[in-house]
Image (cartoon, rainbow, N blue to C red; front, top):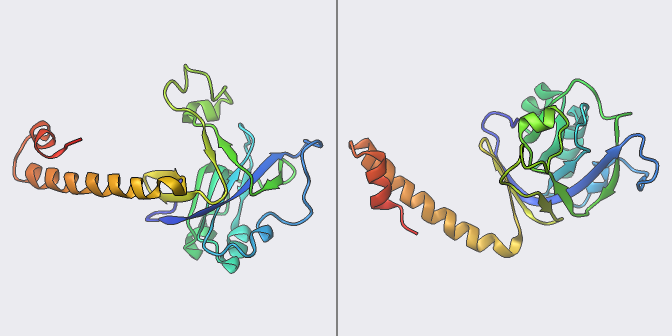
Length: 203
C-alpha cells in the first residue's frame, strides 16, 4: 500500500525482524533505523514473521530515515501513521496497515543480511496460511533480497534487481515500453488489441 504517486529506487539496506518472544535470535543494541547511518540513498527493506499483525514502521522511523538520507522503505510487514508518511512525502511500501506498534510483538534482530520474502496471496497473509502451499501460491517462488540489490517501486508494486542483471533489465524494459507505445497509438486509431499486439510486440 504505497503512497499515491510514490516512486523509489535505490540499493537495499536489509533488516530482519523476529517475534518479540524469540530469545534465541541475535539482539542488537541500537535502533534499527539508526544502524543505517552512512547509507544515504538506500532503501530500507524490513521483513517480519509471517502473520505479524502489528506494524514495524511508523512516523518516527520515517523522520529518522529522512535525516539519514534514506530514500524510502519497503516492508514485508505492516505500517502505521500513514498521514505522517504522506505529509513527509517519504515513500513507504507495505503489505498492510496496523494501529499496533512494533513492540512487544516483534523486534529487530539482524541487519544487512539476505532476506527471504515469501510471495503469498492476500488471503494467505490474512489467514496465516503456509506461503509455500501450492493451493495459495501455485506459481511464484520465494524471493531473496541481498544487501545492495536494487529496489525499484511504484504504485504497481516492488521489483528487486540484482546489480549484475541491471543492464539486461533496462534493455528489456526499454524495448517493452517502446512496443507498448506503438500498440497504444494503433489502438487509439481503432486497431483491435490482438492485432496491435501481433504487429508491434516482438520477442
